[in-house]
Each structure stands twice: as structure tokens, then as C-alpha cells.
Image (tube, rainbow, N blue to C red; front, side, top):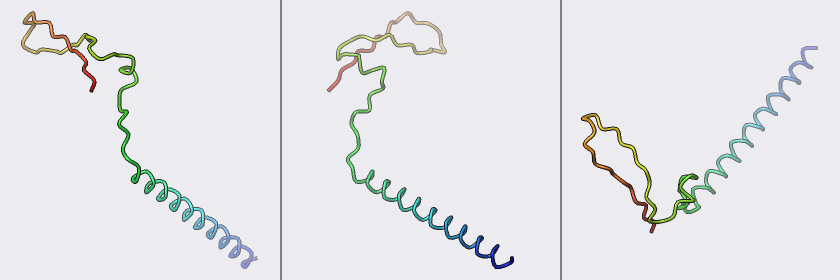
Length: 79
């Protein structure tokens, strides 16, 4: 009985070690492939994709000194 438990433990240990090695190999391969690709330049926020160049946006800036009456509009310029 002792040998059966030892064999069972050995098989489970080998399976766990093999799965861990396979997982680490796949993650490192994916990481290295991702680092070789050029970075994505399409980093616009999803809500900003419909905004055209030159449109005015409503901007809120909390001013701790009070309201000075100036209205600040932000104009989007895409290059």
C-alpha cells in the first residue's frame, strides 16, 4: 500500500511540475512576442472616438478660490 501511495504522489507531482513548466513557457513566449510588436498608437478613450477635430467640449475645473466668471472651452485638435 505504501508503494501505491508513493507512486500516486509521484505521478501527481510530475503532472503538477509539467503543467507549471508548460504554463510558464507559454506566458514567457506570449510576453516576448508582445514586447517585439510596436506599441499601439490608437489609444483614444472609447467616448472620444466620435468627437471630430475642432469640436468644443464642456470642461469643468473645480476652482477652490471661487468663481471668476471666465468660461473655459476646450477645443480638440487631432493631428
